Image (cartoon, rainbow, N blue to C red):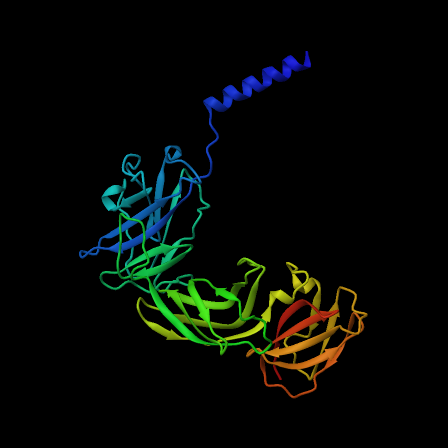
Length: 348
C-alpha cells in the first residue's frame, strides 16, 4: 500500500512540474553602452544561455537614475548565436533618459533584482569606475570589468581592440614573497610580466583603479582569492592606448598563512587604536607558548620596523623606536606561522 501511495505522489509531482516548470533565475548584462552623434544612447545586452534559456524570459527592464522602463518586445530580436540584443529608446514602452555625463544603469529580468553583473556606473558618482565618454567611445564589458572602448562593437561580441592601456613600473618585494616562477594578475590587469629586477608591464582596462592586492599562481597552483600578495594601495585612472607608471610595494603574502580566518580581530586584538603612546596592548585568542611566536610591525612601504617575541596570550609591547605618525601593519606569528594582520594608526 505504501509503495502505491509513493508512486502516486511521484506521478502527481511529475505532472505538476511538467505543467509548471521551475524557472531558473534570469541573468543578463549590459555588455556595451554608447551614444550616437545625436546624443541618443544605445545599449547592448548580453544573455547567458548557460544560466538560463531565453524562452524563460517574460519581461526585461532597463533602469537608470531617471527611472525604469520595460522593453516592448525582444524574443525574436535576440541574435540566437551570440545572445545579443540592441536596445534603444524606441525599444522601450516609455522613454528612458540616460545622462551621458553621469549615470548608473542596470538590467533586470522577470522581476529579479539580483543580477549577475553589477550596475554600469560612470561619471562622478561615488561608485563609478569610468570617466565620462568622449565622442566615438563606448563602455564595454570584458570579463567582469567595465572599460572604455574607443572601438565600439554594438551588436557584436566585444573584442579587446581599443579597450586597454599599459601599466608598467617596479615591484618591491623586500621579503621575497614571490618566486621567479610566479605569474601575477589583478582586477583589470592582463598579461602581467615581471623580471628578476622587479620591472613589470601589463595590459590594463581603461578605467579607474584602486589596487591593494595582486593574485598569483605558480606551476603548482591556480589563481584564487586564497593566494595573493597585499600591496600598498594605489589609485589611478587609465585611458585607451595610454601608458601609466605605477610601483607596487608588497608587504604581505597569503602563502605564509596556515589558516585564513574570516575575522582576524577574533584572533588578534590591539589597543588602543590609534596608538598615541610608545606602547600598545595585545591579546591573542590562540596558544602562543612557543619560542617562535612574535609580533612584527611594518610600515606602508612594506619594510619591517620592529619584531617583538611573545610567550603569553596577552601583554604589552613597548616600541623600540620613535616612529612617525601614520598607518602601519602589525603581523602576528605563532610557531612561525602568520595568523593575523591588523592595520593600526600611530598618532602622537
